[in-house]
Image (cartoon, rainbow, N blue to C red; front, side, top):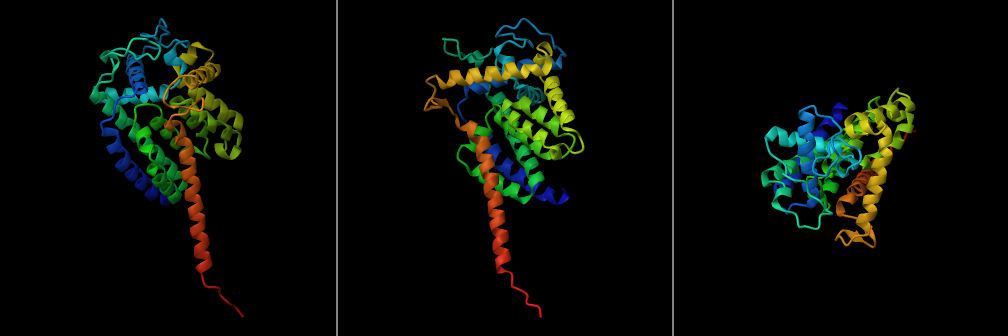
Length: 310
């Protein structure tokens, strides 16, 4: 792994050089960012005061109730990231939560203060850069090439540097890449899934024994479920890992409603904002990087002189 430290550090430097300017660039606030930052401020305050009570479950004061909008999304890892960023810098979140269903137009009390939004976007950029560096630490120089190709896509810089789940999710993927092949892979998968349920796509890899070091598949899967449960307090009030079922059903219902709406990101009846393509773009960049590496090796072999012995 030491020989991969150089490409990993270069990946981190390149990523920060590209993402930080995008994060501090003035862009209109997205309503999803207002939701994430409010929830981060609210739950960060509760964690800081060791308040894990279920609460009343109202929209404005949800507590840790498992049956409200804010908890059903199960993106608490992302909330923790932004809560830490706001807490360390002393920046406040919105005074009131933003609601997509309220017929009244959102007021200034639901908006993220400008400085707080910049801090949250910088945190998203840092998470994404660290995630890419961790992936490169696993893959070597191909990871650096893939990162360069990935960041060159027109939507990537903007989507990774908004205060929503995509930046932290990439950090989760990086943690999983770094832990692959060790007994910590299940833990990494569980933690990554708290950033966004998309990381559930990595869980089938737990069935590959090579992914878990010397740990059995059953123990690795149990560690993944336990890690997710510990980091998602609403699951404590809803039969632990079985809360997954409610979270997935909620997300499917939400996606269906978004696809049936008149939002600008609906294409042919499917809600498909550009940020949903980030994982596909990353996989494509990795595939292209490895294809280029293979082609270069073949060209070098073809140019090597043939040694004749006799």
